[in-house]
Image (cartoon, rainbow, N blue to C red; front, side):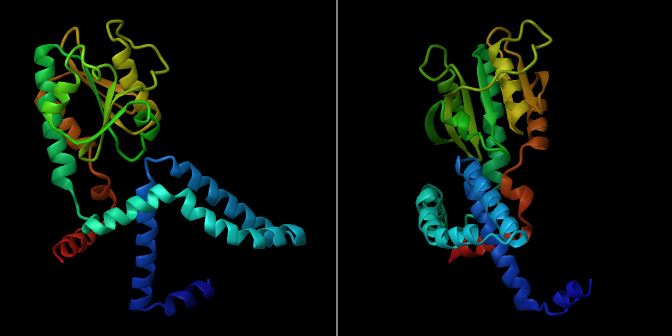
Length: 274
């Protein structure tokens, strides 16, 4: 207890700023890797490092310690090679400036408005659709099964994708922040059969994606034009556009809006003007 109090007495304003900057850098790195295959790789590296520290501190193994010491130089060279795509994306975002800005309008309200408008028109035309909104859990493994688009979210583009007999209409559209990342994606099916036998594979895929992740799935039935939404393995059916918008407003928020405090938004806006 005395050691902890001693550490706090040594803290000053510069020490707090130093700690916050280091924490911000690590958060930025983790956020850039989220939704990519590097997340699992980074998790494995952290587990290996923690186990190594635990073993070397508890057990005095001379040969093992020698091997770890001589492997550090090779590891420092391997890390930039392994995480090259993520490091490149980080430098690109830093170059744009203002990537920490709160993108409430572009990543939440605008996306919800475009998605609701598209679902309304799809329901009127009886065009089946499956739209998945990515949240905290990355959907990269499902994105890789489809066709990459990386286009801004718009109702017109969604209507074009789900027009019957087009090349991309069969499968799911995955939205990440304010981009349609991919179309014609394959999703896992729900583990249990749907209670309503009229619900087909599109509804089972919508529920299946939300059973394994925290994503939000929106389904427009091709037979009935009914709009449904799935979240946390459960489905809400027979929604009108107004109710769909309210549910999405309650559940879908951009990652930065949920995690970063408002003073980081101010910093992002300031740096974007420089």
